[in-house]
Image (tube, rainbow, N blue to C red; front, side, top):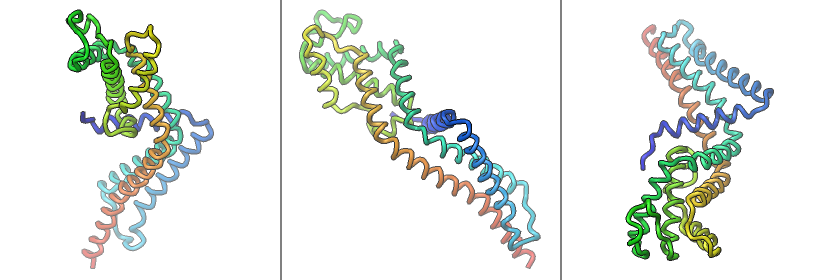
Length: 258
């Protein structure tokens, strides 16, 4: 399933802005001062550095607009760099909120029940003569059927998380399924109790959420580092655009004058 790249970019922005809101007032103030200072320094250098070797060169409106855009992005890059400090805490909150939200998503529950019914029926281990439709329930008297049902529910929960949190989901997996070993162990543990007859969706959701949370907590430091490297590279590229265009224009101006 393809994901709109803008969706995970927006989630990254949301995570970093959430990190800023968790800062102490003094820390947040220093962060904004640092962002303003770096932005102002970049703007001043960009607008004046060609004066070192072409004092007669005059900036055009295009040069000034590009510099303003680059400096605006620089301001937000600095804020994002600082906001990533709280990514682990923000991630944990988002998983908890998703865990609550999906349990209230009745459309997802009905769709997942239908998929579970079809998957178990295709497995061929159960008698469906008394279960003409998903509304009649899903028979899971065999261990194979229980594993199929649990996998469908857990994997559909993972897909739901991926749809609503595309950036976070990209961190922990390249495919959407939970490892079969994890699901199988949970199924065996749950059905040790003889009174348990149906593997509940809530348990599959909790299993997916726990797996997601564990993986994210392990991967977050690496992701923060890579994200900060990406921000630094983006800063350099963004600044090189006006620097390069202004420098080239000033060089051409010298050639014309000579």
